[in-house]
Length: 73
Image 1 (cartoon, rainbow, N blue to C red):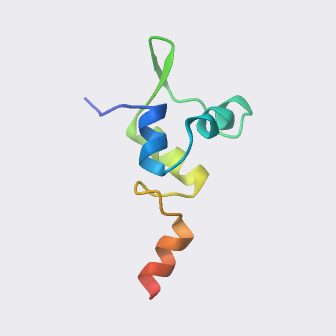
Image 2 (image 1 turned 45 degrees about the horizontal axis):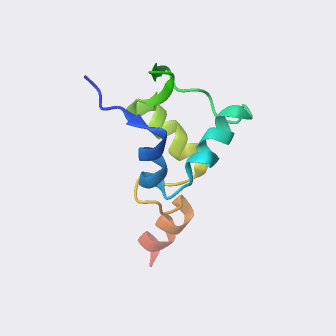
């Protein structure tokens, strides 16, 4: 079974506020995750990757451009 994550867990993982993730879903900028549990969004690993790509962050909250700059330095 795949690990699943809540909106709050992803917000902490990516250094975002939960309402930013919720707004991205509500405005149609980001597709809804495939699963819900007790009417809450739950995210699979595929959903996590899509969310990270949308916000341009990695799991430690560093933006992809900052991460690239660190590698080049």
